[in-house]
Image (cartoon, rainbow, N blue to C red; front, top):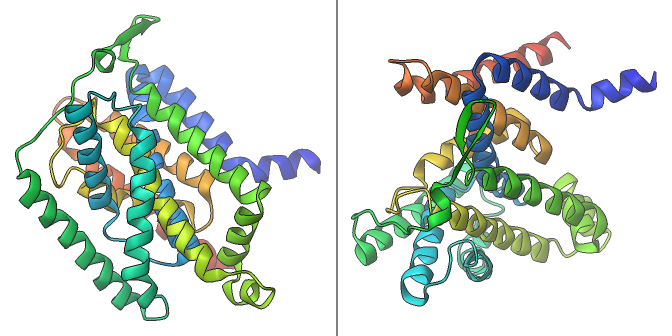
Amino acid sequence: MEKISFLRKHRGILILVAILVVVAIWRPLAAIYGVQRGSLYALIGLPLALTLGVVGIMNLAHGDLLSLGTYIVYLFAVNTGMDPLVSIIPVFFLLFILGVVIYKLTVTRVLKAGHLNQLLLTFGISMIVLELMKVIWTTRPRSVYVDYSSSSTTIAGVRFGTYELLYVVLAFAVLIALQLFLKKTRLGQATFAVGQNPRGAKIVGINTDFVYLFVFGLSVAILGIAAGVMVPRFAIFPSVGAAFTMKSFSLVAMAGLGNLTGILISGIVLGVGEAIVQSIPGYAGWSDIVFFGVLIAVIMIRSLRRQSL
C-alpha cells in the first residue's frame, strides 16, 4: 500500500523522468535544450501561479513586467557595469516595490469585482507598461554581452550550451524556496491558508489584505530573477516578455492552481516537446502549435475524467 501511495503521489515526477529518458535516448540534444527552456518557462510561470492561486488575479501584465525587469537589468549593466546575475538582487527588491505600488493603487480596488474587470485592469496595466517602455527606450533591441553566456560543453559527443543550465538551477531554487516559505514560515502558512480559504483565514485573524499585498509584490519580484538570467541570452525590447504571458497561463492550466511542483513538471514537458519539434528539419516553426496543442489535450483529458466521475 505504501508503494502504491508513493507512486500516486509522485506520478507526475515519474512520468517526467520516463519521458526524459526516452527523449534522451532518441534525441539527446532536444532533451537537454528542452529541460533548459522548460525550466525558464517554469521560472517565469511560478510567480503567476502564486498570484493566481492566492490573490486570484489573472495578471495579463505578467510578461510586460518581465520586459521591464530586463530593461532595469540593462540599466544596471550599462550605467554601473554590474553583472546581470549580480543585478538580480537589486532588481528583485525594485520590482517588489513596484508590485506593491501597483497592488495598492490598482489591484486592491478590483479584488471583489468580477474576473472581467480584473482582466481589463491588468490589460490596461500591460498596455501602460508596454507603451512607457517604448517611449523611454524605443523599440530598438538592446543587449548585454558577458563572456560566460556563450560557454558550452560536450558530453558523450553531444555539444550544448552550459549557461542555460542556470535556468534549471534557478527554477528548482525558486520552487524549493517557495515551498519552504509556504510550509516553514508563519507568513507562508498564512499565505497557504488564504489561498485555500480566504474567508476562513480572515475569520481566524489572518490579515488577508497584507497577504495579498505581499504575494503580489513577491510575484513581481521573482520576475526580476528571470530577467537577470535572461538578459545575457535574449535581446531586450519592449515585447520580449509578451510571449511568456500565455505560456505561463498555459503552465498554470496544466498544473492546476496551487500546484507549484506541477508548474515545473509542465514547463519541462512542454519545453522538451518544443525542442523535439524544432529539431526536426522543416518543422521548427511548429513549436508553438505543439505547446498549445499539448495544453488543449491535457485540459480535454481532465474534463473527460471529471465527467466520468
